[in-house]
Length: 176
Image (cartoon, rainbow, N blue to C red; front, side, top):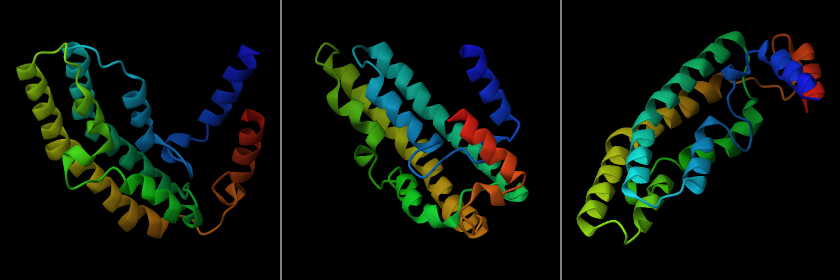
């Protein structure tokens, strides 16, 4: 029931999962890829809104880093064993050339219904936001993940080895 689902989410909320905002195959760093894939890019307004979202992503990444620092301090982390494979999904968001970044893709397919001068302007602005804001923010995130998070992540695999781990694990079972 809907009430039961709400209760299960509230129960998990007590464990402050926001301190560990990713799992082995996805997380806060990959979610925006879904935005890219599901956003209609039909007119100039769609692209302007997208550029605004791109420019705000660095702040979101920094907030998650601070949340993960809280998790590290509390011993609430992903296990080191999964991180080597997981880190490649973070690495994929750091490119030397903005045009190689997966979030640049919409600028490669701007429809002809948008005049050529505006297309060039949108492409330039997208490239600039990626080069000056988002790629550097992703680079800082990768540095954090490799230099700070990985070395301090827990050695054990079991969720029960975390603070309040047995209750957390049982709440996860109920939720899923």
